[in-house]
Image (cartoon, rainbow, N blue to C red):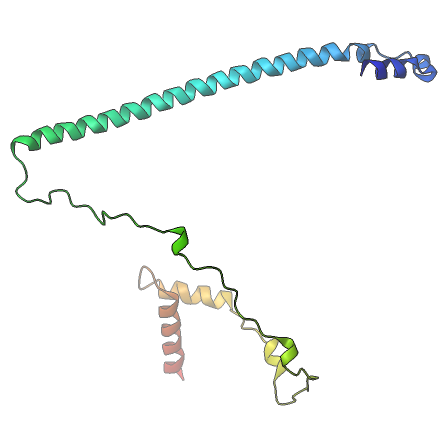
Length: 175
């Protein structure tokens, strides 16, 4: 970098401009900046280490409190043990084993071979209604909101199925 900077400063055009001497000192500026970054990183690492140590201490303390609580209950039960054998039932105490070698090997599904079937040119069927592909159901949101508001006047909540059913009953009774 120093040799490249000397080459740049050696150019006649650059000397004519009267260059800023900052580029000549950039190596030292970069070293100072790197040292600041290193110090800041070291401080952050130290703070993180302290935080993790505190968290570990608190977790160990909580575990010890739980263990002491269990020990106290054990001492209380020592003089008056439970009458039945199963005083602390555990659900499914056997471990579930999933052995790698017990699984079957991968078997790809059999695909259709195109070579075996005859593919011909398609024929347009005038009996098929292709307009059905372009028709869509449209929901009138204003009417839906109005129906929900009317239904919620007599109850606190309603399902969409109940709303649909009550709407169908209302339209059939008015006909």
